[in-house]
Length: 210
Length: 210
Image (cartoon, rainbow over all chains, first blue to last red):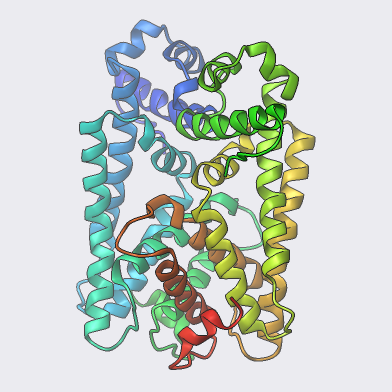
């Protein structure tokens, strides 16, 4: 994910972000110092503070950009159709594709809410709610159309998001399953979980909007 | 979960464990010092080392006891029947009941694998595998009997465990849903996800083995 083009300043900032994600995912935010991060990137600590005046500014930037990146990826992936099955399939595919390539960033985003100051926490939680609402609205539309069978919209949305994000815990590129294989299996599980009709040729749905 | 009976030593050890779970869940293992923990419990640091010679001994003990506790809870909850639907229902109920009451412990167990030395990590991972195998064997039996529809046993087991454990992220006692309500909704989602028949009176299944 590190940018390899751009000015020296942009490259340095990208290197700081990448190193910060890896260090925080490995040791936890509180245990990582700006000094340690500067050493990892190969710059003076003073240089770091030009980009991120405080360690919490850095954490907040990482977490905000993770969520705005996820929302932007969804805006790009979201299909024109009103069909809840196609929209849910697109949501599942986008969610898995986004997170499976961002293990450290996902880890930091899920773990370090505890380390944000209240106003910043509120802002990140608002972004998360915006993203979750997209899924809830798909589930609600499908339930109202009688296509999905969902007992509790909010709880089903949380369950699906946690199930899908959990992929980063066990998936390593190069395992027996390809990313496409993971997406297909999670899509089939999701469709069954929401009680959507399971066509025999269900895998063609997976690619219909790709 | 703190023991309130027993000798002074047992009470002190229970207080150390409880405080350690809360502090590590809040700040991360690396950021918590034995000195800080001793202050929290109200003992001298030297007293702490009588119970746990190193900080990693303490972490390992917490993580091991979390997993042996989970396995013991499952041994107690596991029904006699060979019926995969009843066994899966019991697994879901036990998993949710166990974790929903142990938020800090679950958080530490899932987050701090990164902080264990290799042999201890191996031991904890073996305990986790033992627990996951129980679910895989239920899913396999159900699939072989033609009762469940499961594409990938291992992946379905991981997905279900992550979906269920995710409850601790959003659930707070006293929310609109009771713990029983959460269990019922997750049970219904699980049964749909594995393609189990959905009887109209499915809620009677929930309590059949309770």
